[in-house]
Length: 145
Image (cartoon, rainbow, N blue to C red):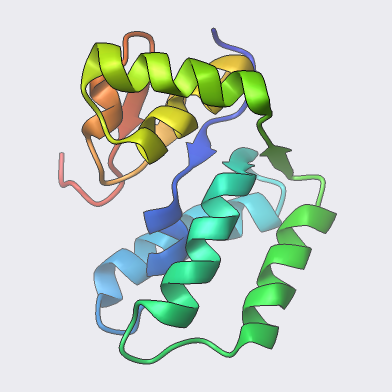
């Protein structure tokens, strides 16, 4: 499945703006700064961008201004250092199969199906749920080795 750059999961994007988690914020900033400087290339799903938007505007104690969220998403969409991937109807059907076979939440299964279709085999995330899907590697940048 190798071919596309690793996928940055929603939690990495959220921690970039989380003042309550300074170490995770620093690590997230280092990862994304490498992309903005063209030192690394990453993938992100439109699902990740949608989840990010909801989390930082509706699910945190101090929501981000919507205009800042829109600007951040536009910056990602407009920069060629990001491999932005989407999904269609067949992806949803594949996600349902992945959900049932590997007993993971539908939204994780949809991300896995999108990754498989986009030939992405690694996700950078602190969530280990996708380890249940064969062929997907999860790299947790926050875990001390």
